[in-house]
Length: 286
Image (cartoon, rainbow, N blue to C red):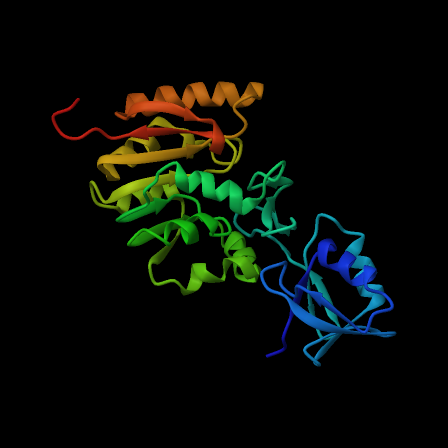
């Protein structure tokens, strides 16, 4: 099996700035780890196995929104088109872990933050993440990975095989496929959630796509299912988006109203994570 290097413009700039040196410390996997690469007139050599030409490095440096996989003489964008929805999925680089771009929409906040910090606040919203946790939208798996550090089990749901393909190619998502505490489900979350037993989860993180892509996941019927599978005294976090934008304000108001209709209590905004929290009361306290 050929060893691959995964690079973005961040790593390409480091390589270009190292001109004149014999070696440079750089990440071969989008900042997850670092290695020492050898520099020559022909390019940059990783592990005495794979030399990437200067022309290739210059090409990568000019593409700030793209992640590239280099194997031997082959260079390709980490990108695919979904057979299910026709949407374009790709990895989008940041200075830390990448996020995913779906039909031009970023799946994590990156302005003034990064995907891991964004995920940290979402998980913190249901803290402590203990027992069995439901993650309704896998994406790149950061939520499931982070929740599984303290939870006994995390069930995570992904609709689109194209998203799974991006996740498998993302170095930062490796633990999603290796941690036995994470149970992956393939399918529509609105359908998969109906298969779970009552009171199954101690906490739920609901991080759907924007309402234009995941409308059913903002509906009363889905919220009623989330209420059913959440155990008494359980906590829900629902990501919505920028609460200060006009559309964010409207969506937040509608979400909070429907969550209350579904039976949730103590429904409140959670601005640090761009969402709302809600609880299922203990028996006899309603």
